[in-house]
Image (cartoon, rainbow, N blue to C red; front, side, top):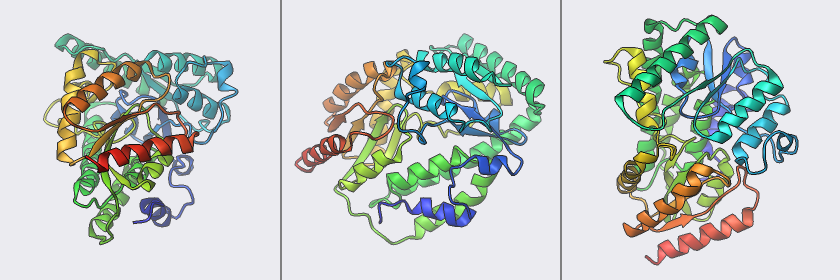
Amino acid sequence: MSLTSGIDNQLRDRLGISDPYDFTVWAKKGWLPIGYFCESVPVVMLSLGKLFPVRAHGLTVRATDRADAHLSQVACPYTRSVLETALQGDFDSFGGYIFATGCDHIRRLKDVMDYLFHPVLSHIIDVPHKRSEQALIWLETQIKQFGQILTSTLGVDTREQALSQAISHYNRLCELIDSGNALRKKQPPLLNGLDFQHLIRFVKSSPYEISLSILPEILQEAALQDQKMDHKSRLMVVGSVLDDAEYLKLIEAAGSVVVVDRYCSGSQPVFTKIDETMAPYPALARHVFERTACPRMMSDFNKRVAEILRLSQEFAVDGVMVSPLKSCDLWGVEAALLADILKSHNLPVLQVEREYRLLGESQFQTRVQAFLEIISFK
């Protein structure tokens, strides 16, 4: 299968647009994009009415000169890149900015964006750092307050019936994403990491209604294709935000295939179904709480390790790449501990810090090729 993403081309052809990730296309058709900057945000609420959630990214910039005047050089490159993107006007069609207390970098980003842009809607959801029933009640209160803000600011219906319908649509989307992951699990895989990354990016920049209408045919076509991928190793990639598909393209061009992701901007555990047997607000609070696999939940380290080990067996991976962003405080601690434990379970591990955009291509490529050589001799 070609390493130029087949799904990327399919999206263009089926939608009849040159850039399937351009959320302004849908804004011009009557939807209102709401930008969110952390996966701890209850994105289902951003799909109510004519709203749709857009995972803010900084893929349209290469340098962050203007953003560096407002954020420290030790701020993570994701926050500096998205601020630079905002400064060049790419987020002007957003109907609001939604954050969560994921880390200090995101909190600082909110402060700066509020100061610079004075958005009509800017809100941060305080997600607890420890799991308890009391913390869950607190989170439910936060989400209900957010619902009231959406209603008062944008006139959105956030009553239980509307939220239940949005949850149903979201769960259907999760089922489709699971279908995509099932294709990656095949021997050999029927969907490579580059294709899947483009699929996820499309879902996170389009109204759910559009995704639900187009994904079934794309996934069905992928399931029926008879092309086999030539690869040496099946890899899992773990870490913080990974928006730039060029990383996956380079990894797979070296002779591997990324069959499972465990980074916060990917599919696992982001697209996890919400319990529809519960009342919608308690169910949504529990969903946000339970799907959070970020190192910010420090007491969950063993749980995160167990899940990565489970996925490594389920997807029959030959090695794991632990790749946090530079200056990521949370993953800076987690990565080394995680790598040591995975190695103790006889999993080959490549630990490599990266920039938000793929800049040092030759250096990164050399590390990947050397890692694949090690795996081949295992």
